[in-house]
Image 1 (tube, rainbow, N blue to C red):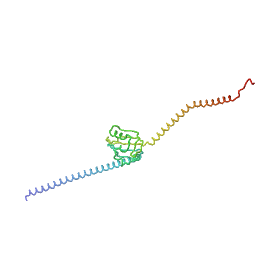
Image 2 (image 1 turned 60 degrees about the horizontal axis):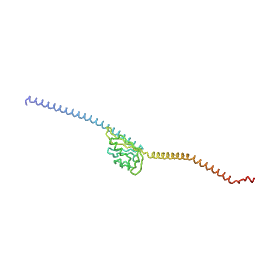
Image 3 (image 1 turned 90 degrees about the horizontal axis):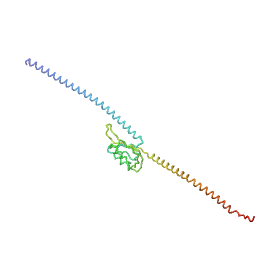
Image 4 (image 1 turned 60 degrees about the vertical axis):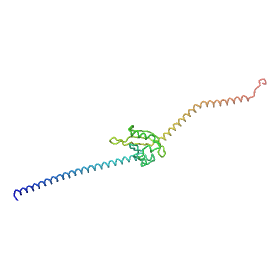
Length: 239
């Protein structure tokens, strides 16, 4: 072979090796960059997952805390969805209405009572945005026929962004207080009647005393008249 061709082949071979080396280096750098990027992305995802896990734990703790409060309070608490159906009920509401939460959800709140005392109307107004808060004192008749006198509060339930999630209905059983108040009112009325009767008797006492005194005097006068009639009549001529 001619030396010129041999030299050209060598240069071509060296160039090929150089090109392959450069290409391999570029591929290796690209892979290393991808590996580094993937490693960073993996770390970011792991950090985000940890934060989400911590947030989930916080939310669970908050939910448990809220449920603990709802289980502990003596007032009945019902939450109602945007369509007016019951979504949750605490144990106090179950005891008050004599119905389990399982039986209440997802029934319309009006169907929980034979007579809801106007509470379903308050819920509709609050959900429609016509009232931010509704307060009323009412007598409810449960599905079993028991009457309960309550103080009811209905308020809107909103999300952080302002979206209406539903309403919260709080029922405070004041039946015992109402019964005691009625007893006191009856006692006051009886006391007032007693005072009126005593006043009337006092006013009648003076005429009655006059009649009694007149009767006593009349008896004395009649007695004296009888004595006078019983005495013998004296004849002056005979003396």
